Image 1 (tube, rainbow, N blue to C red):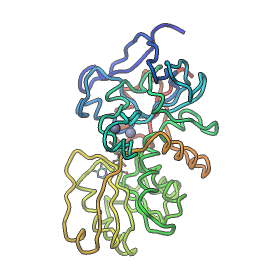
Image 2: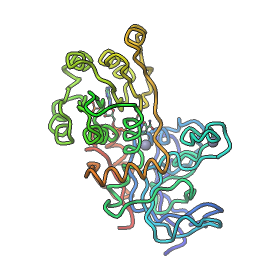
Image 3: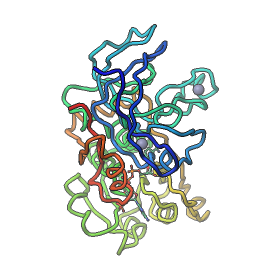
Image 4: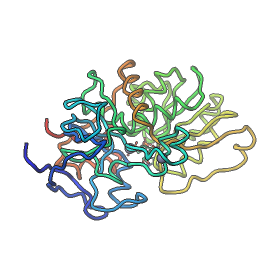
Length: 339
Ligand SMILES: NC(=O)c1ccc[n+]([C@@H]2O[C@H](COP(=O)([O-])OP(=O)(O)OC[C@H]3O[C@@H](n4cnc5c(N)ncnc54)[C@H](OP(=O)(O)O)[C@@H]3O)[C@@H](O)[C@H]2O)c1
Ligand SMILES: [Zn+2]
Ligand SMILES: [Zn+2]
């Protein structure tokens, strides 16, 4: 082992640059991880462009991280050197704010955010808070497990916390990194599963992922199709267009829910009428806790759910990121290191 490691950092807005950094020892309550894989999430764009609130540059992006623990900081007893672990976006709560004191740690007001408040996983090495890491089951390779730590837990939690019943009509809008996992979870959770994407080329992929029906929103009015089917009990909106999200409310059944997990830059335009008449609702859901990620991984092993991935070496992070931003990834770019 050398005393430096390779990382890819955002040195200035829009610039991903390979650098070498000195390896440091984990502090109290922290572990040092030798990274094996890191997924490229669309949320990384908020680090690359520099707009994530509270971000300072330079910063190493990446919050779908899997690797092995190689050093333990003082006071860490839960984890062992050599264990394979993962790190997601919200990777350590402060434990003292009001949501934390109410047990709602994912909504901590002062969280450790991988790739934002601390350096993330576009690197050979990452320091993480021991309370913020997730155990990785042997059945999953590191590259397969990585996307489950953000795209996976976000869609899994969004669906499982929506008060749905088996057989309910549930749509997943956006067939990208999040959406292609959302479709698989919806199907395996026992819902009548509709995938809403743009373009004919995604139809076969969506069906292969388990969708009972694919709606091509480029040529069909998705809300109208859902209404003809009786209306969706829930729509998990994973896309990056607020305009497209707002139009979906009209596809909900009475009491139906639009679960916003995609984070578009434009506003979501809403009409009050379908919200009032029919008691429909729109709310957001933020990723999950480390134990939620362990549930996501366990369910994925149980039901043979895997992300569809394209791997690239760490050195090609900028190209892989660009491929994701262009919507070309099928469906998750994963950086692999040290293999
Ligand atoms: N809530 C959370 O905790 C959380 C966690 C992770 C990510 N996110 C957010 O979720 C979003 C998706 O992330 P990702 O990693 O899945 O991104 P991605 O792989 O790049 O996929 C982007 C998605 O956006 C859709 N899309 C793009 N332009 C669109 C348009 N004009 N109209 C409708 N849909 C459009 C695409 O749908 P098509 O299938 O139609 O091409 C695709 O499914 C991002 O905004 C990200 O920041 C939120
Ligand atoms: Zn993410
Ligand atoms: Zn807190």
